[in-house]
Image 1: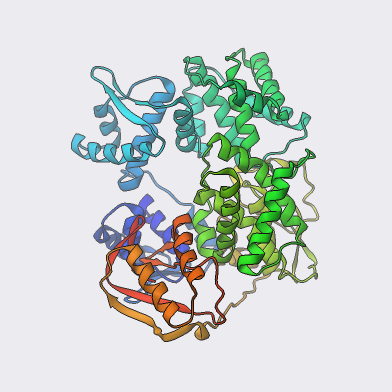
Image 2: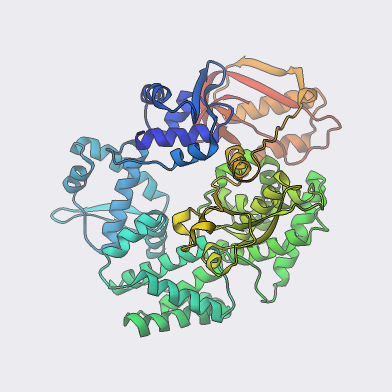
Length: 592
């Protein structure tokens, strides 16, 4: 049995298929390199060699080699109750403070340190890190001498932070629902929301549905404690123009009818705001605004101009972007932040799509005069990534059939569908893509496999024969997940190889430079490439612009800066190995 941290190390190894050094694992886990090496030594000895092995080399660090994908997948799901430490301890303290604020019950430091089985001094170290997390939401910890700690900040920020931390996992939601100061049946509340959504012909993604239900609970509790949100006249009039306002009103009326819980009318605007900004699973029949149409046209035109890829004939991409922008634009205007679970996967596994996402985001920033963060860029990238994959898929279809169940947005669902078709294009046909709660309504008798991003216990109850058809994937179909599907259906493997020799030149491989800042590195490398005739001034400037939009650090002491514009006739890759690692965003960098 592995500890929680050791399971996390397995997940890190799984994400870095080419190897990862102990320092990088330590940074992610929030512990020392020595602790990581001790854990890995134990894991190497204890791991079932028929399932997977961990190898180590001076060049690549630690590497996980999977021999039985199905058994390894179960291993990733393992967990155990242990004393938490590092980042987990920080998150525990943050969640405890948020729960105390949410329930209106100040929290004493000694009580929380006892729960963590640590000394008060050790607890205060974790509290300092928790305060840093909360500062990102503009929240501060205040301590009332005889009562304990609670949080202060704008009500919108408090609610958003509560949603992000204590309403994220099913286990957390189940716990918080059990300690609410008001009696709300989670099943009945969910039924109310789905019933009202159906009457308005709206279908949200599984993730958006659960997030919205969480916001309803937060609203009912906080408003019941007289912590309300006010809206200015013009802001409220803008929200009233959306049909989602009537939908939010209908939901609150149903809640009052079923639970007898009433709130101030301002909370209707708050819930409507989140409905407007929620990810829909499929396009609705609502009229697409001319501004959104123009944005999509400008995105596709700008991508063609910079990258040289013509998406103008991709109607699926156009419709997907329109649907996504219907939620994204209100999120930006209302300053609603959203967390993207697949950000790291998209950045690492789909670099071209992410690059195109950055270009598309620049179009939005120019139009809306607001910054588009990495999480939103990644959502744009999955739409373009799916289109890139479709453009390389043959029209042939297989004899075996699949359903895809995706809890995230339509872009993620389309990308996953395209990835499945790319890997199994001659063997498998994807018949339908749907959110999890719609699976129970579907006939699976003629379906060979159900590929789901939701865990089996999060799906509706299915017959045993149908459960056996489910393959759970987590990372938009990575190498191990492809093997899982292959073992389920075909017991075959696919081998991928790529020759990149022509991109590397001896004069572009530089070592031992003593640079101390990212800016000096970028100046040096772009100047060198300009002097060799491998990059012009526009490309050089776009390298720095791209880095500002989203840092290109990929972990394992490596970053890959690159231009958004490149007019050079010859493609080239320049490599710089530093004399000493330097801070690069939130980790250390050794190589380019």
